[in-house]
Length: 412
Ligand SMILES: *Cc1c(COP(=O)(O)O)cnc(C)c1O
Image (cartoon, rainbow, N blue to C red; front, side, top):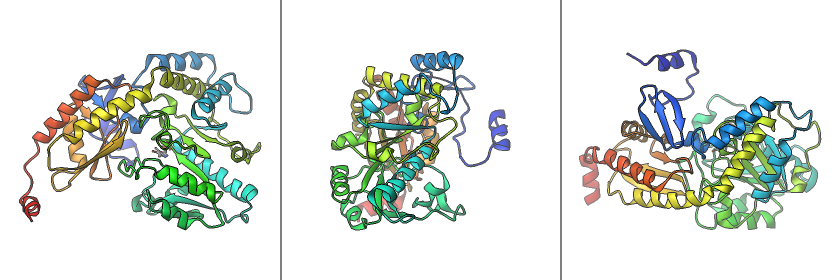
């Protein structure tokens, strides 16, 4: 008989996800518990939103204090929370201005609007003709404009007509970016590491080359760090690995401390200056509750040096995964605690692997059929990494031996 919670969700919720068959009811740190009290290690972190672990006491305290003080007033008024939050956000990221939103997709939409208006009003591109270059394999959310520039058929199928003004180039190919730039190009929008595409790491120095190309052509470099930002890859920003600063920066996911949706578009002064009162907004964006939690999350990130921990623990996990001698593993890649393990589907699908991992007490999720994502909260310890590696090894050891055709191919 099906679990009641699953039955209800299946009955009443839109079927736009395909969850693993586990019903979670509590969480603490890197751990999650299901209804029967079985414990799981969270290797998913809600698509990298739960960097601080579940129910972090400092964040829960900030949330409940602010919730009982003042939660939502809209930006029709000033609040005593928004300024201090954005001051710390700007100081930590080195960006002069921030525009607070809620979801990642909204912050990406904000970046697109800023880039187009800057293109038309500052760069001098003829109105309605500005173009934004994006990368194939991108993921930037699910609004109609955003799925319109996706290269994934499923994300687009049936949802058009789409907005024009986007040009795609291969990810990781700086020469292709330069070749695609025209006088109409306002911006290049890029993820430093493509998360949803399957944790795709570009060649060393790619972003630095893109920076140089964008400078040469007066094109804005906008980094979508909704997933890679805030310590996830072992540096505060993934663009820090290349030592560059983008003109526009998009943050989300972990910015809400794993408690609330909080996102932001950050930009250099002349780019953010295109917005004047009435141009853009959000009822909930920058509300005192989000600001208080976002502020507490940033302080925690800095005080606990979580980017450094992500660097060290990521190294340990990557090394451990790469040392598993199983022929089903095609590649293990990633930076910091954003790691993807690409499996040969003739052994097992990533989905089935995740279901087996779940039985071993590890929760993760497949992306793109063949990739298993490992992205635990950044607070994870070496002991927990080692325990995860043991469970992963155990899952591999229970896998059947390779099918005959594969063994043959390997001798060919
Ligand atoms: C998740 C994600 C988004 C969208 O964020 P939502 O909060 O789901 O709208 C945008 N960009 C990247 C790189 C993401 O990983």
